[in-house]
Amino acid sequence: MEGGSAMADSAPAEVEAASEALALLRLESAGSGEAPCSRNVLRKRRRWERVLAARRRRRPQERERSRARRPEGRGAARQRGRALAEERLLEARSAGPRLCVDLGVADRMTPKETSRLAAQIRRLYGANRRAERPFWLCLTELVPGSPIHRECLRMNDGFSGYLMETTQESYLDLFPLDAIVYLTPDSENVLEDVDPEKVYVLGGLVDESIHKNLTLQRAQGQSLQTARLPIREYMVKSMNTKNYYSETLAINQVFDVLSTYYRTQSWPDALKAGVSSGKGYVLPDGEKSVKNTSA
Image (tube, rainbow, N blue to C red; front, top):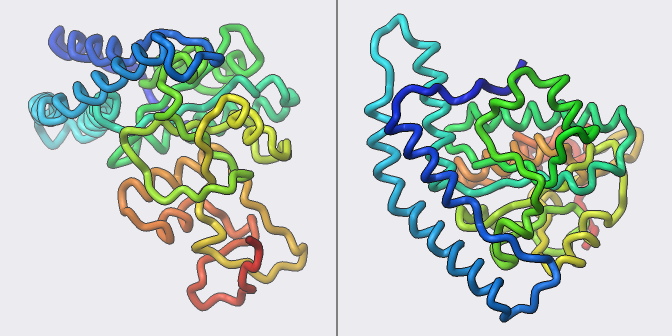
């Protein structure tokens, strides 16, 4: 099963470094109705700037710690692979982009859809754990005992030990508004780059649930920036008997796109990695297709 195990309790220094990094993430809570120039907003902005500065300072230190913690010997290949994955995740916590899954909309799903979302979270975590340049993941508004929490524990071995952040708080309480980008297929804005100083939010809904404009309206109501993946800009509609075209992806598929782009800086490569042919879009590489004429 995809996913991962808890971080090894290998050394006091590593634990101390991890605690310090995690402490930097605990930003002061602020309500979503804050005035733009309130003291809470200014404090949150200053705190976020300190987090960004600390992440930049920690990059060379994390690389040195990673090299120092690598196990030696040919017989330790699997252990070394696990250790390297955890080291990359710890470095992402101090220096990588943030990706939040907004579970505040999870109560709109059926039990079957909730189970599928739990499986997608497992796939997302597993893909991030294997990534050369991982994101730091955060599940927000994850309430203990809620249907999605119970399904994550039931379906995902070691979920409680996943090397990511889980919180009952909203992303609005954790990060400044101008650092957040809510990714939704209904946005008119096209995502052009992955900025490691931004926090990207995905709506916690399975792709089988078609809630038109739900995440867009949620983000707009919170005065957040929104963006969609550049599917129409780089892909074309393929010929299919069902005449079916969809830009709505599962959260793990969106992650595959973001992760591949962050590594390669190529949108065609990224979209090929995450957008399946079943969505009705392909890259214009000689396959039979029709041009996308939508705005």
